[in-house]
Length: 600
Image (tube, rainbow, N blue to C red; front, side, top):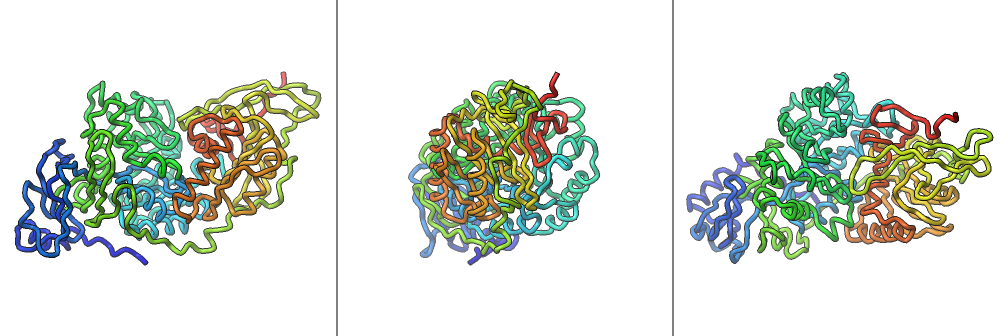
């Protein structure tokens, strides 16, 4: 089953005019609410909204003349009528859900528009995977716009992906109906160096008059930043402080401030508005990465808006940053982002503008959720066999695959260690003195082993290194085929035998996340589609994810949303240290470095 496409404004203009002029009845009237006008930044009590053909025909103090025998009337009873919320930058795969199940999870939270970058599946399945995500997105009862992934691999020469994205792929995708722009341009050194491939992708997007997404994950705001902005990216979500946000908007970019499951970057940037008084039109709220547990238990864009308000932001400004600002940025101000004539009829009813309870959600003129329950069907794509069974190890893993040999005769070594930073995407480049036993380097204290296992081409390759910050104790290991962005397999553990058990288990089930301790599996999240997603209901996946988080805590990890930290340890475009199939990467210099420092 597919959803009937929403007719365009020009196609429905005669119907909209007829209803607004009183010559025809509306399909729906929301009566007696407080209109939250994000254009004028006002709340206007005692207003009605008339809807026909999935679009808004009239907003005013009295739409009684638009009501006919067949008109559905919703009594707002003074509640706030808000525009449907927009997520400006996100990855559906990070929810471990398909687009259909992601939509089902977020509709009750008032999200009616999403701007998604499926670069996770692009790394595994290439353009064919992007098309599957795009096609299922268009089947949904809410607006899921797709940005064509730009960087697979994210950093050429520093990692190997299952598939690569080319300028020709980008040019082809720009002709698809649901593509609104280019996904985050993560190869910021390439853009700054005028890399021909990166500039060709940007040019193909700009020639199609679509938006180029940005990703500048560097504290350097000098010439490299200037060169990156000159290359064309129009927004950035990698800022972590007020200085970052200000630098971006001063250069004409939109500063996207994110609150995901593990990325808490709103509070440190929103002071540019609340304290420095900058014009909020250039600021946008987004989630970037939210796993299913966050969606089910905490919310989606409603959670981000509430958080912005709690950080001191005026509620109407916070709402602008989650509605109109997003729509304007993507050239869709005349389609979504406000409750005004001609726009898609995406409306939320809420009794409290600060705490933002989502009581009724209307999308495209249809009641899609009420009091936390999704009321509509979210159709699934028939995912083919080619999208499943994507874990190819080459051989069964052994404990010896994870051994790190010390230099001959050494009793201790100095290792370069990836340092996890709670609630942020960047890591630290640390050094640790580690003991040697039987010729093998051992973890010590909070330092344990990390390995990246190649899983796309069955090469049998295993890269070993060290990581700190998880606080794991005992004989344990955790493995995941979600490993942004190359999506090989990441295994973190204190015991090499447990690491082998965990890796082999994921090969057996076709991908996912597993945690082992003392030879037994404590938790498993099966993700059979590309090793990234489940097509099971979000609540089921969230329960499995909750069990995984509890298992991590049982093994000593107290980090907030530590799984998200685990899954980004291979993202070789965010400083400082990362792991790839080609080695340990220093993202400050974009060079591979040795795991063990040379003996002196």
